[in-house]
Image (spheres, rainbow, N blue to C red):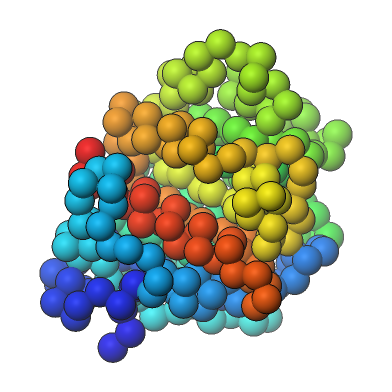
Length: 281
C-alpha cells in the first residue's frame, strides 16, 4: 500500500490515523496553464523526499497517523466533481478525522467547504491566493475554479491574503476589512494579528499555490508576480494555528513541471509543516 512520504504502514492505516489526505487529480475548468490534474501525483512523489523530522516543532508528526485515501477521479463534469468531493469529505469527517485535500484545481474547494460547513456551522475560511476567485459564474458554470470562494462570501467570514489579481465584478463580493492585498501588506502594521482577529474560532485554510511568488513556486496555472514568500507565510500560518482551531485545509493548483520540481517539493513541505503546526505546537 502506497503511503504519504513513504511512512511505515503502521502509521498509514485508516484506523490508526488522525489525518486523512484526499488526492483530487482534477483539472476541468482551468483557463490558462493546464496540468493541475497531475498535481497530486507530483506532490506525493516529492513528499517521498522530505525529512520526516520537523526542526521548528521538534517533532515527527507522521506518528499521529496519515491515511492516504484513494484519489477521487472525475474527468467530465465540474458539478459531479464538486458533489463527489463533498460526499467524500463528509464521510471522512464523520469518523472524526482531520481531513486534508491536495488538488487539483481550486474548484475542488467548493465541495470540501460545503462538507466542512455542515460539520462546523461557525466556520471561517482563510484563503491564501493570488486571485480572489469570487465570481458567481464563469464560462457558464458556478463550479469553475474562478468561483471557488464565492459561496464562502455568504456563509461566514472569508479572509483573503495575497490577492493581486481580480475582475472588477468580484469587488462587490469582497467582505469589507477581510481582504489583505499583496501590494499593501507592508503598509499594514501588525497585519497578521489584524487578519487573525477577523477569523472565527474554527478555521478552514485553503491555499492556492499561486499565492506564493513565482520565484519560489513557478509551477502553477497562473503564476502572478509579487507573491508571498516562504518564511513570512509560515509566520502567518503558525500564528493562525496557535490562536485558532484549524479544522482542515487544502492545497491546490499545483501544475507540475517535470523539468523543475521545486514547486512540488514546496507543496509537500508546506503540507507537512501545516500538520506539524496542527498537532505539535
